[in-house]
Amino acid sequence: MIEVKTLVREFIYNGMTLPDPGPTFSADQVRDMYTAQYPELTTAAVDGPVHQGDTARYTFVRAAGAKGSRA
Image 1 (cartoon, rainbow, N blue to C red):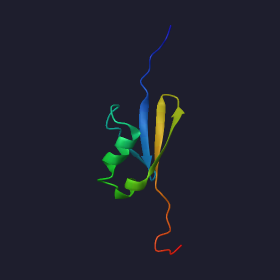
Image 2 (image 1 turned 135 degrees about the horizontal axis):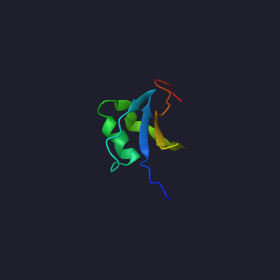
Image 3 (image 1 turned 90 degrees about the vertical axis):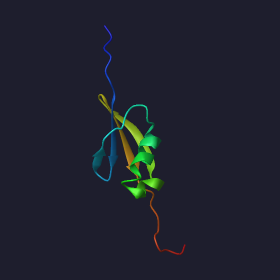
């Protein structure tokens, strides 16, 4: 017998779990949606998903930069 389970997506940013707006959004679209609240996500990368049981965890990773540096 095959059991069908719904995969739950989690979006993590800066130690916070952000609600999933829905399965129709890609991980990039979710990141773009949250840029209104967290402008630094504009340049963030999406890491994942990492699967743990029935959960797919995506992490938004801010781009590192040398602010004020003259490289």
